[in-house]
Length: 407
Image (cartoon, rainbow, N blue to C red; front, side):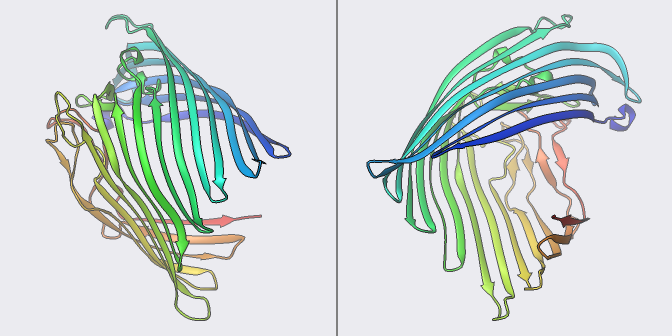
C-alpha cells in the first residue's frame, strides 16, 4: 500500500525571527517577533496539500531589586501566537497522483497570553513564588467541502492559571522546591487538519503538585522531582482504523504522576586527570484513567511505565573519551485505552567515542549494536483492532559520526 501510493512528505519552509534585549538598570526587557511559512505536500492515506502561516510576537520584562532589605524578582510579559492553515485533501492514487477532492478547509488560530510571576526572598536563600497566566484562545474552521457535512465552527477560550511555590537554596549548590499550579491546553488547530473540528473539544485543564531537589555534593550531581497532575478533558489523539490519521478527543478524568530523576558523577582514576564519568536519567510514569465511564481505572496508553538511559565514559585529559550507554524500557506498556494490546519491552546497547579539543571535536557512535528489533513509538487507539496500524519500528544497527568546529 505505502509503495503503491508512493507515500512521502515534502516541505518548503521559510522562517524569520528576531529577539532583542534592553537593559535599564535592574530591569531587563526582551522583545521579539517571528513569521513561519510552510507548504507541505504529503501523499499518505490521502494526498494532503496545505499551507501554514504562523506569526507572533512577545515582550517580557524582568525586574530584580531589593525593597527594605528583601530581594524581589518580578516577571511580566505577553505572547501573541496566531496562524492559519489552508488545506486541501485528495484521494491518493497509485504513484502519488492527486485524485478526487476529499476535503477542503481553512483553519485560523488566535492565542494571546498575559502572565506575571513574583518571587519574594524572605531570606537570601528562601523565595515565596506566586504567579498567574491568562490565556485567550480561539479556533475557527471554514469548511469548503460540504459533501460530508458542514464542519465549520468557532470556539473561544478564556482561561486563568495560577501558580504558587517555594524555592529554598539550602546550600550554595543544593536546592529544594515545591509548587502547585494550574495549567490549560487548547487543541492544536494543526492536528485538526485530519479529523475532529476544534469546536467539539474542551480545553484540557490540570492541577499539578510537584516537589523536588537538585544539586551537587561529593562529586555527585542530582535532579529529582516527584509530581502528580490531576487532569480534566485530557486531549488524546486516537487512531480509529487502518490507513487513517488519529482523531482528537477529550478523555474525562485522568492522572499523570511519577518521578523524574537524573544523576551524574565523576570518579578520578589517577592524579593525571583521567576519570570515569557516569550519567543516568530515569522516569517513572504512572498514568491512568480516574473512574472513567468506559475505561474505569485503566492505564493510559503510549508511554512506558519505566524508562532508563545510562552512560559510562572514560575521559582522558587529552580530550579523548569512550564508553557504552544503554536505553532500557523494562516493562510492557499498553497501546490502547482498553488495555487489550501491549508494546514489548526492550533494551538497546550503544557505544561512542570521540575527541574534544575545545574549538573542534569529533565523535563516532554505534547505536543498537545488537540489532534489536523493537517498537520505538506507538499511535494509541481506544480499543485496538488486529488491522490497526499503530506501531513504529525502531532503528536497527547504525553508525553515526560528526565533527564540530567553533570559531
